[in-house]
Image (cartoon, rainbow over all chains, first blue to last red; front, side, top):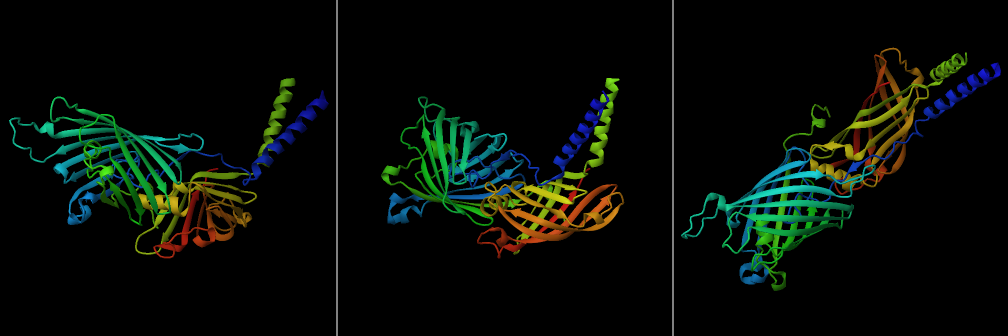
Length: 298
Length: 182
């Protein structure tokens, strides 16, 4: 019996030592992998015309100028479309990491637009892997162009149209990202009773990185409900990053910059050479510093 | 009787643990700042989630930090830092593994400031380099705080980019401030 007790005591001593020996070497202790939110799926909050899954950071104000020239097919008389230009000028602001808002004014139809974009799910890798991110964008567009004089006197609500989009995006690797954007565009007023008010479409967009600062983007929307006489928009662009801003250059058969205009009302056709050159310039301003950076003495 | 013996054994075991246990100080909320301003524009960031541990007896010390955890004032700068310079998807962590060489000179039961000599391997951007630097350990109510300041040359760690040496300083100042719990 006594031997048993001694054996027990000795063994516990040894056990105790062993437990401690394991704790001593701090280098050997490796932390397991943790979840990591994927960033920079796209380089900007727009791919070409359409919204990307990216948001402006919390407290960041983006000043965005977008220009679309006329079609190359207009020929040398109007310098391959450069004589004609439509533009949109806008401000985007990140309220939180997940929520951003934006306002803009386009020369086309003298439209005002406002949108809200919210990140519902963020792509992650590591322990808890989520292979794609999902965002919602709601846009309302208000046309202020004066209506032609007809017997019907429109209500001001007739000037509104809306777009709802779910953005599903995945950064496959550092060099390739893809996004699907199911879209519903609603017009409060259409030309006649035969035309529906709701138009469904699906956007497919991608980003391919070709160097540290240059990415190629593509953007296509397939329309399930079509307005007669219009084409599906297809755009091809370059995203060029410099220190403080992103510069986006592209060719597209669309000159519109609001969802309703470029998805449903693209008059140009790639087949007829109606390609339009355009660019977006974005400059970011920090309005609200991240809270980690307040009260720091550099 | 038997129960008492088991209790005795457990008691002995717990004593043996206490006698042998090296005290390990740890934090998951240490701070690392860096400043890489080369021109007019401030290029600086902070990370408040530094993971660090050190042993009182051996002086063994580790710091680990996630590159994506560095916060910049400018979101775009943060994206460039991760994607173009640090390549954080390939090299998610920066680490230091080394020793406080004069740990014996630090009296953990007495409040005060003690100079500390660090030596070990600094791993940034997947490149490991031997470094040594001086810092300070401050003891307040038995809790140590380590502060230190040193600089690294980006070229030593294979960090490349056209702005380095121009807008971005070639040598980056790093400040460490970690308050440990016991």
